Length: 273
Image (cartoon, rainbow, N blue to C red; front, top):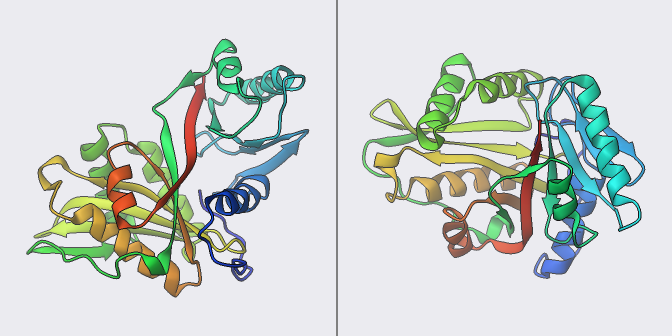
């Protein structure tokens, strides 16, 4: 998600080696103190819940909650009522350390459908490989306009088998509203898009997010994914964002950990509507 305030990045206190400290920092800066991630979006704090509400094509959902066994069910019902009144499907982003311990069971009982669990990984940008060689004939280009976004969406649809329409709209909006904090990168093999990924900077936090890394099937296993990670890490560090985070699927987690990322917890999207 994109943070669009323009204040300078906050310094990261001390060495980022302790996973518990990193997780606490992540929770504070990117969840409890979340900023809107696109035009027309707003962050709302209601009780012990932090959520984002925006247009239908934007990401809508719960970013953070500080619940216990007494308050969880009422908070869940409150979020369902909020988004239902707006006619919006939404997501509860459940992390492995969120309370109460049975929050996932309570969400499923209320009608949420869990998606595939992901792993929250964090790394210091300077600790990652500075460069990964590209296969012959492949170049990386920033996607800054309609054609570049079309190429990113084409890769997304071919790599993940999903409709890229919402991504196209959200990416065009983000690039128009906040080009300094959102960068889309496409890998071109003799002019054909074969890989793509996004970098999102969160001003004032010290963090940057790596999102949407995808490689079309026939180009997997040739180093393109690693090259896209290294390229975005260099961009983030050059812009003063020294901590990178990724929500990694099982397919990408081993690659990222070999590059130097540390696993902090799990995150499981729970969809409603």
